[in-house]
Image (cartoon, rainbow, N blue to C red; front, side):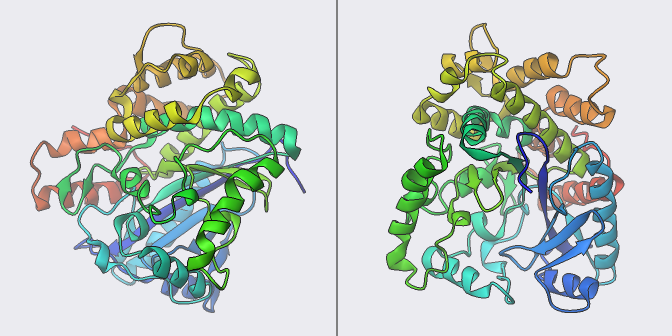
Length: 411
């Protein structure tokens, strides 16, 4: 059954499996899935959720079991799913670790999934070399928004393109890698941008091209990717629409646009609150609350892509001075920081006293808007020259935040 705009939501959350004491990665996702399913599988049903593997054997994904009609019930479902998985991992001396990157692992420690779909992962490794942070050291939240037909796809794609550059200002959670502070707020996305430099058409400029129909998308986005990778992929293992690595991709196999640039947070309630706010802003743009659709569609890719890079590096402190985008998002004043812009959008779309927004979403967003992204809060706790012990302490606390369903306070 095809869903129309905002009639359902697909959420995917990725977590690392690590040693409970040392935080070293534990490549046992296959063991976890086998114990739950009773056989070796890539995916298993778990109540309202499904659990599945990813490229790396130390990563497990929790996702909605099909489109969910409402986001409000999902924090509780994901919180229970996290506890259930964490309890199973405890028997192996392991646990789940939130956040978008492991803070101390080296990429050559990663092990690829060795079971079904192995030819796909092997092809990725052969073409790109997947022993890198952007391959085996990244966890993200994916938000899938449905559409029905070209007209809805065109409106939704225009709205998502406009919102996408600002998403790290809400969701950045990766300020540490290889045991040291990064000089950017969202290190996951910084390395992600370079993952497929060997075949640039696969990722483009991260911000998608301005195309509004399926036929145009297949011609201008998908066909060049398949053409460019064909010499490296003679068996056609990778020539599918999921090869597309832009920050938001069209999934015509399920009639949805998948937003891929949100870092995983310290607890599902924060991920779901971000997903709800992003969906609310996207819906306002789709419904032309601020500017007509034509103005959204006129936004050029290069300025949006440049802003995205800036926000990856500066998160909520980035100054946004792209006037057409500010106008598209309902901001009529001068240049503003990305954090202030999100605050303005919250005030417009989730006004105080409105009963339609769950309290836990408001509370989670209030932490982010008021105290900063998880990346900023982690950095504030660590200071300028953190020791390995200090980093381990912070990530042990983040793991506790995950199973206890509480926000990380920072300083």
